Every structure is written in C-alpha cells, then in structure tokens.
Image (cartoon, rainbow over all chains, first blue to last red; front, side, top):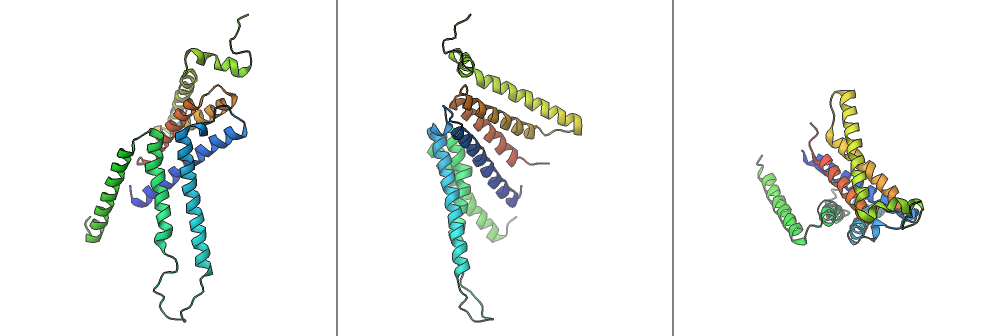
Length: 141
Length: 102
C-alpha cells in the first residue's frame, strides 16, 4: 500500500472512530441513559484526548491561516522571497501528533496495552522513520 | 402470576435475564451480528457473484453498536457490553481500512 493511501486511511479511521464515539456519547447524554460509556475512565480519557488534540490542531491551523493572511509583502516586486512566512513544521507537528494519538495511543487505551509496549512501538516507528529517510536520501529502492 | 423481583416495567423485565447471566444481552447481540453478517455477505454473493467479508463485518458491527446504544438508553445494556461492541467495531474497521482491496 502506498504512503498516500495509508495516510488517507489513517485519517479516515480516526474520523470514523471519533464519529462513532461522539454518536454514542451524545445519544446517551441527550436521552439521559443510566449507564453512560463516558463514565468509564479509559473511554473518557481516550475521547477527550482525541477531541482535545483535534481541537488544538484545528485552532493552530486557523491561527496559522490568520497569520498567513495578515502578513504584508515587504519585498519589492520581482525579488525572491526566501524566508517562509509561517513555519510549516509548527502546523505539521500538531497534525502528526494527532495521527500518532489516533493510531498508537487510542488503540493502546482501548485494548489496555501497557505504556512499555506503546513506548517500544513508538521507538520502532522512530527508528524505521530514520532508516526510511536515510534510504530515501541515498536513493535505495 | 410470577412475581418479578425488579418490577414489571420494560427495563426491569429486560434486565431480569442479566441477574443470572450478566452477559446475556451481549450473546444476543453477537447472535444478531452473525445473522446480519451472514445475510449481508451471502446476499452480496447472490447479487454480484462475489462478496467482501470485511465490509459485511464492519456493517454488522455498526448495526449492533447502534442497537447497543438504544439498549443502553432503555437501560438493559451495561456500559461494559457497549464498550465491547465499540471495540469490536473499531477492530474490524481498522482491519478493513488497512487491508489491501485487490
């Protein structure tokens, strides 16, 4: 499976999980259910972590968009603009963290996986990322 | 007339079997899951000659999560059962998204 497709699938999976949890939680809250799943500690933490992360990503993206829109061009016409207006890493960091939370933290919360296992998976991911960048740099296929 | 220990409201009658077997409604919902999964899969096979087993799994899991949510509002599905159903849905959905579609 190519990287673009994996990335889209990750995003769709995260959205589907959030939608399903939102549906159940809101439906139960609106109808005064006696046993709400939000009372469960793991579900509560997972839902609010995910919700908080997505909200942060949204507000940062909106903030970056506003900053980008308000910047006045200072260079004269025809001159090359070298500096970036907004640091792309700032925005991408939160998006990547959001995807990490959806893919690694959420299943580990759901399935009750210990933090050591999660840390090992994260370490493997980081090492494969470094090796991947290295292979890309060297042009190995 | 049999005297129900919890009362004779719909909620108490539906909760009655769980006094002896706490996961009674989970088994019933899993039974409905198997029925809806087999129905959707084989009707797809009958209509198109080929069925996608993972799609049937996901759709049936979604169906029982909705039923479980309705049951939890009435009061006979506990949050533990609903969490099991949601985890089942999430697992099947993840397998569906990350399996190759050829």
